Image (cartoon, rainbow, N blue to C red; front, side, top):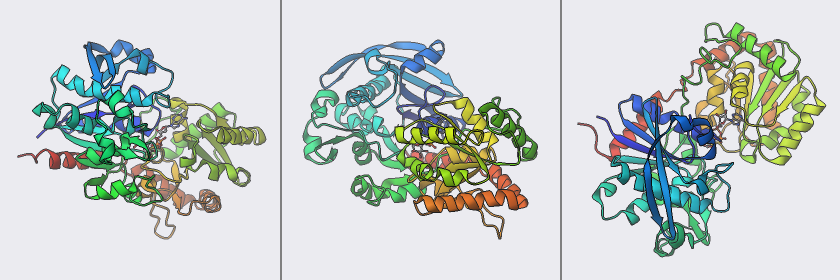
Length: 483
Ligand code: ADP
Ligand code: GLC
């Protein structure tokens, strides 16, 4: 029996992406829609969405949104993609900017967004069974629904799921946000429910007030209960432990498919990957100015360059890594220290290492297809999308055993031939280099074993099939099992 589900998020494909959250919002709703549910998504209408997609949008209308002292118009747009309806909240001042987040007035912007989404439900007269909010940008939705729409039973019938994609980004703001932007009483600070340090936290509000809390892998759901990974939210998470589910992400296997991907030099499947990956490797080397040869182990990295991603384990050991018989391609932007280190690398190892400083979707596809190894030594990783795409393209992930990396990458066992990648546990660069050395050795010395690993990786189920059914089970638990 079908359910109606509204996903609310700060970003989502195919419209706007800065990270893995957008991958999830672009694929999980589609997977649930295929299972027969009425699934819709609400996003802010950013400048880039207007530039790239304006012609695809239908204007629905404008209403005035009141939230505390905010009294501003919201204009709604919609578009249907792959059976999923996307809604957009337009407000020129708040959202038509170069970036998505990281502004002084983020609290006000996303307070407005969340109230505008809740008002939209009444405006379009579509009442979802479930609202699945995501990350800090939408963490206030369960509380706002109860506190500001309490006299309408249609709002009160909605069940709330709150999904944590990254606990480190919490949306913590000053306490005066309560009356000014959210239209809420200081009571919610005084009773401690959304108090965080001396202010309030959107993330904490989501954790406290949602009916169920999910995060994006089983291991991360356990890690965040500890002080080490808990980002000062571990106490409140332990309090919600019984309602906390860890559901691993999938990827859109139609979008990410080496057999049909138009951006590749040659398409391939698990049956002909040897010639397919070779063609892609040679084309990538040519494109990036690396020495063109199939005989070298080509390592790739596609990532935000931040501490989370273990980038400094790599920059610390660039000389050791490039002392091996490898080529290295890095795609990403982020912290200046990391960017500078990779620029140094490119200058010092011409023809052997290359750094593309920027965000480039098309190049990312070609790196996933053309490389042999994919480096992802994250210090913490709620799920990780990069390693899933890499496996789908037959590029073996080399990861640290944390969060979703631990749940999705099975390290090579040379005695049984099992595994779909390589992994190490301790968060230090020595262990990482040791594992890279081991993997590179397998590439050159154990060709049969390597082939087996590539096949295992390509045969790994990275689709949403299984996980979408777990979300479905969660929704059924909340709003009655089907008859
Ligand atoms: P996170 O969301 O924490 O950054 P994920 O692994 O979940 O990490 O998702 C990152 C997504 O962003 C992947 O789809 C990856 O391919 C993509 N990505 C990261 N950096 C870049 C870049 N510089 N250019 C293109 N795609 C990128
Ligand atoms: C966050 C996490 C990443 C996860 C993504 C999608 O960006 O850092 O691990 O894959 O969200 O859930």
